[in-house]
Length: 403
Image (cartoon, rainbow, N blue to C red; front, side, top):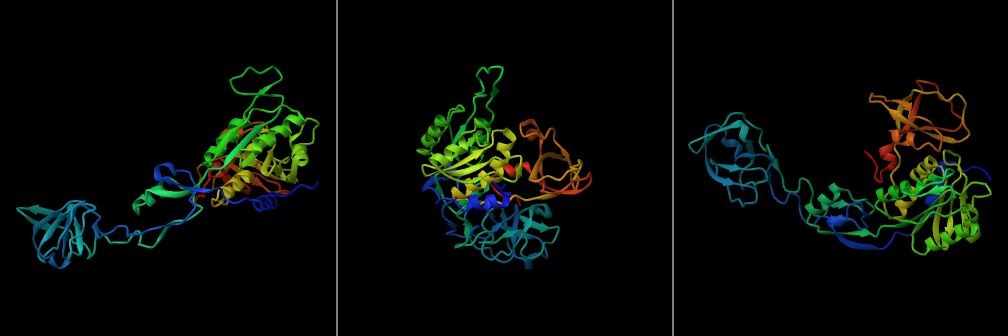
């Protein structure tokens, strides 16, 4: 079977996204990390009245020729009447601008004595006033359906008076690791066994997307048990993610069980690390079969599974932004697959990318040290000093696009 290029695989996978889950109204404090199901439209102006941007004095700009009597005091949260010409209102940040006033002089540029205020530095007319509706106008769409809600979004919703928002139910994502060699952290491995890192890693990545991981027990290298685990998970999950068992070895059963009990839509990528990836459906539930090597699992989740999960959640799918860096390493032989290298960037204007350590797909420590992934296209060599494209790890893992 020919290897599928990453861009083609991503398009195939995103073409098979189901309808978003049901929506429900939740109070704002429960909406962080959830996906908005409907646009939010403001029903009032923000700010709802002209107000002062500074502590100072509200005046008529035409009255700046001499000392002005202070005729009223307006703290924030208090009503304001009309300011008569020739008078000044002592006003505080957020205070309602009295009718007639056209300028606020900040208190640092005034002297007040015996009920008279003298302006020591003349402002322009209209200075230090926040006009009604200057931030948001009634009828403006302030949040869009498909947004993954961040703290600033919830603050914005609160500013227009919303206390609840319609959000999609978080996807339930089953995580199934496979392999006789795996022991859960806290257990006691035999000399021929290793600890299961993929279960923890995948569940953590799912939580970062605001979704609910369903962590199933590790499955031994057995065809029947593998198929039964897939069918069991399909009963309660919106999607299944497995790790291991998707290559061509005699003990690799995941891909074969997807084919036997459902449909296999994609297998083998032109990607390094991450070649043996399977995507299909079992009992109506989409299944991603990820490689067992921990870095391969981490890479393929970020490049292919994350976009699908976000789309299935009803969220906007961010494009991974590529920055330019200079290579501090060489790749003398061109590869046949697009390669993602773990690198550390320095702080220069055009950063220099240094390999984060051993690039083997089984070495997770270099992923922990990496600040970026260098993208090396198939058929391309790299010499030290060459410009290369890099993706920040923080953006690779994030559910939202950077700007």
